[in-house]
Length: 376
Image (cartoon, rainbow, N blue to C red; front, side):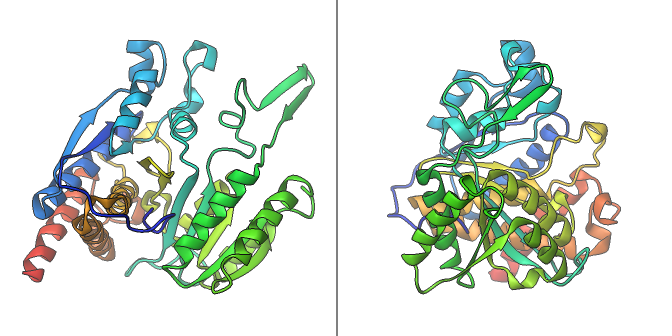
């Protein structure tokens, strides 16, 4: 995984790289379209051999197939080399019994995408919302914890035994803990060589105590990488006070979800928050934010999050043996995004600029072309 688990594998013979595109709900089709425009330009510049196949999820799928994600779409995801997933409005879906599955949760569970990699970094010209500059990666366990839609073999992980009692089950496994912490150390080995393990073992003594014990066992196998431990409430405060002291943060599902949103807002906005769901065999690029139905169809959405997530997917494909040109294309996209965001007159409205989705995407594509001319 790029800035994620694993190392570059052996190079494979050149062939088409098949990406499954799932537009989603709300602003999903707009920002997915923006990401595809950038990927097509990167394909033209670097000769990546990308092909795209589109399938319906969300409300479109519910209307046509009776479910917000079907078994056929999951099978397509398993056959693809990678997936581009647009935001979904799962809070507005009907109950699961009526087809209202969370596509994101289903893909994470059924493709075993155990690592949710969420970088947060300051960018030139865009000062942090508070505190100092930030440059870190949050490695979030993605398949268990308190998340009720992915922690059980059958049935949900929360229930109501009486009308007045609601109970949630938290699942923490040795396999889940050790592989997510190993992923964090793999990333840290290519960064500033420091891992921060975040927990609440002083209260959740069994489940977080178990997570912490597993993390310590993994850390002992990496004596050349610094490792520290922080309580989650202290971590939330330290991200505001002094985020620059952190490099790679690893934690359980819900804590990672919350802390990564906080870190991204400190860096500038959820609109620029990239995210990759990755496992040993599959990866899904997904914006960190939601579907924002209130601005859907108005050319207002900031596409940066999904464009950068797609760049992370290209880097992951390099590590799976697709070739160094995928890593080069990923870096070029990141540079083009940074150049566009650095200029106030080229930003989207959520960052104080004047541009809409399409105009901002055009600036990023122009940056790809310009950097190529400079390189030549």
